[in-house]
Amino acid sequence: MIVTTVETIAGRSITQVHGLVRGTTVRSRHLGKDIMAFLKLLVGGEVHEYTKLVAEAREEALDRMVAEARAVGANGVVGFRFATSQVSKAAAEVVAYGTAVTLSETEA
Image (tube, rainbow, N blue to C red; front, side, top):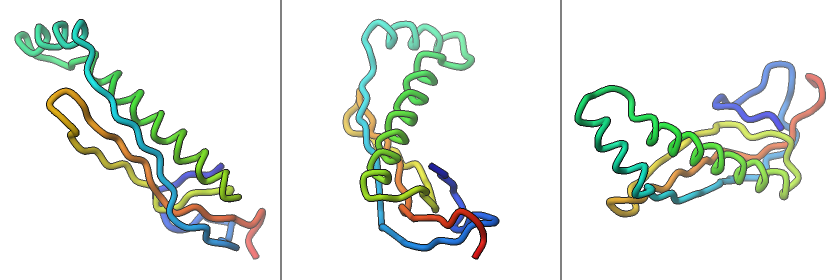
């Protein structure tokens, strides 16, 4: 599966557009990690607990989007993007989305 932020793939042509696909996850903070992150905020620097949480959420959303693209018969996703929103003070949503397409094996 090719996933790209651009609308075209060099050397390939889009033979079919399947439409919008997306993957979503909502993650909340863990109390124990939140305490460690708070302590880190006091001294400054990267808050590794939150960095890891966001990275895991992005991967899960991406995996779900790719699964949806495969389910509709696509072998690529173009125009890929991430979006985030706050669901509550302790939870955030991460959405991965793009256009599912079928790509030719070689340039037509």
